[in-house]
Length: 222
Image 1 (tube, rainbow, N blue to C red):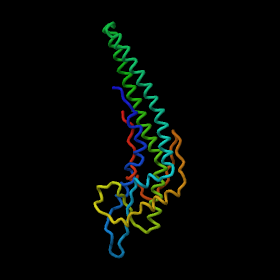
Image 2: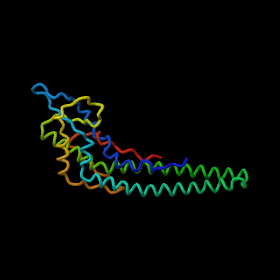
Image 3: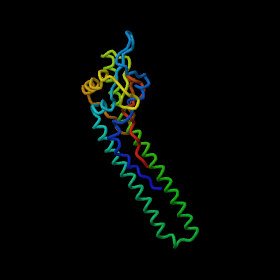
Image 4: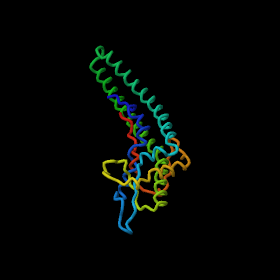
């Protein structure tokens, strides 16, 4: 019954460049035809995973999360050690206990195990929320860079190819990933939110939903 929050802690590093910037872009509509009738809306595409790799402060966000996750691991380990100590003590003494004493000790162990599970679940949720908080200012920059380049180049829609399976063929001349990367590299590092504080959200200039080529990291496993 002992749960472990550690296993997926390290996925923040890889997952910060995961699958979150495509949903809103796909929702805007996608067409890969290299030419269009006069007056048709212009479209382009990007690889949002590649763009997210270039976001200023991404490494800082990863390092900050890992630092906080290390502290959480320590908390979970202490809780686990305490519960295991109680279980071992009961196993050693069980044969000498009266039926009433066994019932009392077993009830106490069940309650402590339940308390432990609830505590670890709370830590899971806390760290998941923290991941989202650290990603928020980075996502803002991705959205802003995407929308700035889209407007500069006169495109009506920009969609994401990092989801791969959605696109079977595309004109490479319509790939504006490098333009967005160049734009995002000129941006200053965002200020990362301090743990325990909420990040003010400002209206995004670009897609309103969370982009999908930058996936939300998975919470630590139990």
